[in-house]
Length: 408
Image (cartoon, rainbow, N blue to C red; front, side):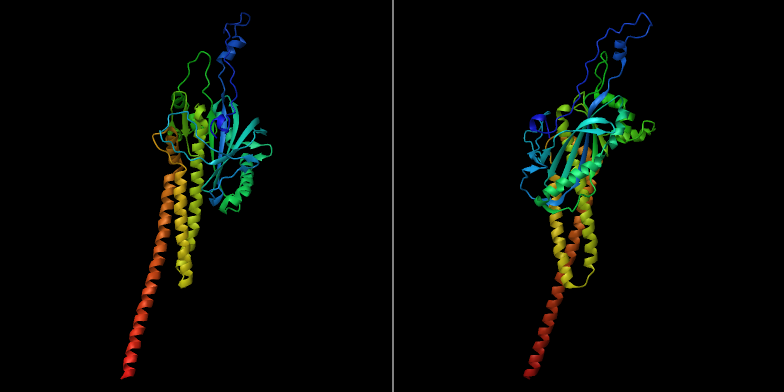
């Protein structure tokens, strides 16, 4: 996506009303504040955009030829914005993407205009992002947006239907495509345009606002009701991972959701990094399932005594080990950053929240186990032929003895 000039999602911002500049004088009739004065003291609302991110595993791998169109729309290459200072030699993975036309939809939170984008990743993954504008009076009111529903069904159902359409269309470009979309990974980002403030109140630093609202932010990210009484330990755990670049922006990252305040110039790139981490999570889970099935079958097949069956298992183990090792490297390449970069730091925090390093470690250990099984079968093969050679030598020796004895 990126900025509007790159053809990506445009932030569906709702222009804020200018603060009223009433005099605030008391009415001489009833001694109550005038309507203008009441408007001045009324808290401003929170405005922004919801970003729902869904990732699915499409195939074992994808062909490297680019698609020209998807869902009747031209494909484009994602490019990163330059809202903040970046390394001189910038590397950034650029997946193919398509931006769908906005749609006016009726939801349980009102009628809104939704915006959708679809990204294809060369590792055989799909990411769908849906943006929905919001305006609420309190942070607690945003909890209802966790489970958004349309008049025709839930958001998750509609996203899955869209993903199935994409899967069917890109199947010819996939290597061993999935028969249907499996369990995906979802992530929710609450994107506030700015912090509300009154006409006579100075702007509050985003980091200070977070410290003041830690309990409400924790309830929002954890989808807890307003009446819930979270412990201080839980509140600290949900809000401890945050990053602020300017005084008026902050990004708070949790396992299932994130809060982004300000940072409108780099919002697309921040959400893209979240998509990358979410794609990594769903692909690592898919690799883990493949390895579990392969190991289970391999343990069973290794116990067989027939040589032809073991030969087949050996070839299959070698193929699986090489392919998954290559795909694991490619998966790491889509999030390769250089330099002390703002987006890289956000990714590092997300990686910690998603335990991606643990997923990589588990998969590497299973790949090593597959390699050990392959080596075991190879050693059995060598031992088999060594025994055969010894038998042949013994037979030749016996034949020589018989020949010698027959000659006498």
